[in-house]
Image 1 (tube, rainbow, N blue to C red):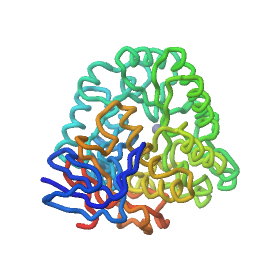
Image 2: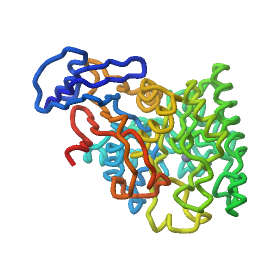
Image 3: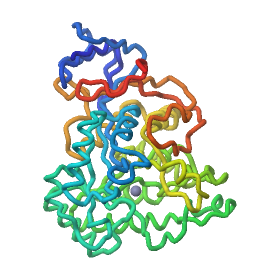
Image 4: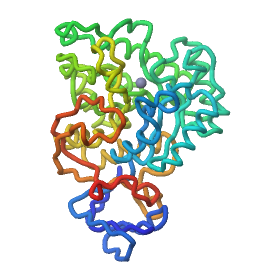
Length: 426
Ligand SMILES: [Zn+2]
């Protein structure tokens, strides 16, 4: 199949081509530039629209195998495609945990059959994510693991994280680290601040994130092992990464759209959909996250898409599980809260959602150019809409953004030359 996209603004991390035509034949972009003619099986008028290299999600939960009442690989990747993603990294906290080549292969095969997005499984660092024994890194890489993480169950013992960093260094594997001193969280459910006290909900102090961030930066620097810090949420964490980078430490990081869009005021009405880990912080943190995005301290935007059933999220906020869905709101929140206020420009969107994520994983993609894979996200950055439950493609509906007016929508997602999301044809 061939596709011709006409008169679009093509945006990469390092360039913008206005009035571009993009010709796609088979899996690849065969022409890109102004004044390109040609015929194709399907033509898209890109007037007023923007084309980005296909988005790559660094951090999500597809809940498959074993927790498919929340989400599964088919519904999850369909939702990812609707959010403009052509590839997603999924975290290993499934049932069983993705700590064996069998689970890694199962995920890749099921995603391949579904065809909505490439799924790049992140394998566990330790067996069962229990923090006691390293997994078989080499075997997991061979099976297709894209990186390693114990996500919500971060490795507590220093000896164990040192062993993991040494092994990762030997194998050129990337560690993705959720920074939290779990032993200190207790029954904390939301950010520890004025709003938690007003609502009478136990808090999670910033220090629980920041001390672990500092520890892992310390060892990464000492051992020379690249680490990627997940979902940075506090002003202090942003500053730790900024200083580490200035010192030349091999550290990168991501943040989630919720950390630059909303604050812990959202928990005042005890809405369980605003319960996420790390928790929504205060305005100063939100502004520091925006600053970190603008100055390049923060490499990527990752949603931490964490679906839960309505039943699970119907519990009181203290009892409800942590997490919110994120694929379908990431781009609109980026436009609404970063592009619109002038925190970043269009090329930064390409950098944060596609360019850097591809670089961090060392995989092909992340740039629109001749001969590149035809992974393309076509968006309308001016369209406004109210995000409501009926639009949600994910199996789960746990979003604190329901009912909000947002600006910026994904219109089409093309992965390897095929439409995986096509809004106007719905
Ligand atoms: Zn996490």
